[in-house]
Length: 336
Image 1 (cartoon, rainbow, N blue to C red):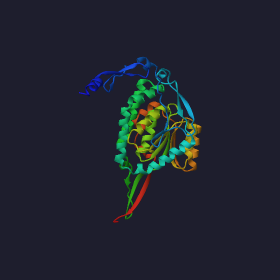
Image 2 (image 1 turned 90 degrees about the vertical axis):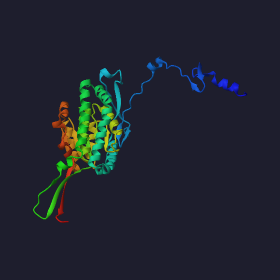
Image 3 (image 1 turned 135 degrees about the horizontal axis):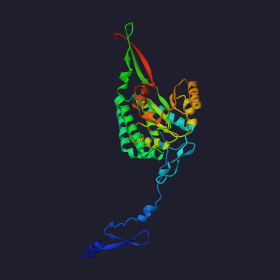
């Protein structure tokens, strides 16, 4: 009976002082929380997105600490800051990204073609789940809602296309060659290594996907320079890559100025090939000249019309994979 008063006290409602000095009711051990103050919800400070480059599976700032500003479309300034700071990559950032891409290449090329296809398909799944965010990012850069949605859909479909092609292109490009002698002669495609990509400014998402995916489908790794006009969408896409099954270092995305970084890519001796979509004719010539110094394979292009990137006959296919593959010919004696 001595414990009876304690049981009664534990069942009673006791008051606990809140952080603002007011009393807060408490029943037993379960606190009864105050209703959330709606006025505080309206005045809370928004947590804005910090955009970073994507290197070796991680999001990093530029080693130089430099940034450049990207303007949002006027109709989206209420939801986002009218200007956003985006890292401005440097020569050192290019070197770091190339190093990680080179280290990742050995593991990526040794994966089976079927496994690479599975990984690419998983990337398409993640993009599908983040479709609203990708669409909103394109709208923020000035695209209409319909155009942004169509570009995201085309980008996802393009990833699925290369996922299906991953275990088929080898059979289409390999051959058994006729020879006059007691030998077999085979030609087989092999990946080259690390490829530098300068993505077109428009379309920001579809252009990046269309230039990066065929490179990695063939077993290469890539260092890509995102659209200077809309680098934010490239970073959102990089988040899809980071949360898929893509091994770290296979896809690396830098942001910055093409005039500064494209020539650094072309000079780097560990970059085996360049795929550059550049408007400036003088810059295209400079990239070709720098690439010729170390005898790398350089493909420079005048950017296509943005609508042309949705054309399956022009912007995807076996030729896009083949351009950064080497053909290896093997001779083997008959009977051995």
